[in-house]
Image (cartoon, rainbow, N blue to C red; front, side, top):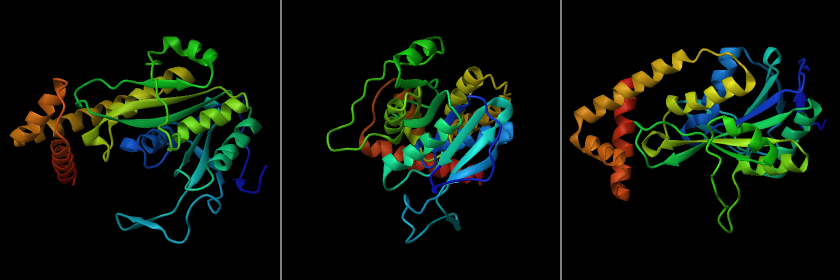
Length: 275
């Protein structure tokens, strides 16, 4: 193992699944889902990737008066034969960073890599959350055809732009003959700076079934109900908010300035009510 991979112990694993989630993605989906798995299943940190080669260390980010240091940690769930990797997205040398993740995956003889991602949707929050999947193996796509995944997502990275980290990871995994898929949930654009428990539950339902975790997700039903109630109060308090969301529910688009106004008003309302 390279010196950039640091492990405090070696958990007992038998061909585990690997879940990869990134901090700071759309709707904080990666961190929300991996935090939920750690809390619900008792995940224990046992390794990390040293940040010095991959993150700017000349300064640090401060959020809500707390210093934010980049972290890239592995968590083990031996009873479930599962490993979770949660990390800030690397700033430099993506290929080398992703290769380190897969060095560790090969060491544990990981059977599949699952990545998590949120997508911006211009639909309303009242619509069901769709789970979309992209694969690096036609065999895996066929195997998961019964999992109620939208597998018809066609996308090509625009010229001159980088691929997403998740797509890049699938490519690197393919070169090592490790099956993998990226899981994406579209999140309403006015919730992307907030948590979306409906999107979180949609992903966790998939993991529950695929990994046979047996998790009780009823606590998320309470979070969904509470958020829907707050959004209903926001609509009741502002005819402008209600009209904008009603148009989205009818699959009508808003003007860019209307989108921005809805984002600002929803974020302000939810943060004030939460506080």
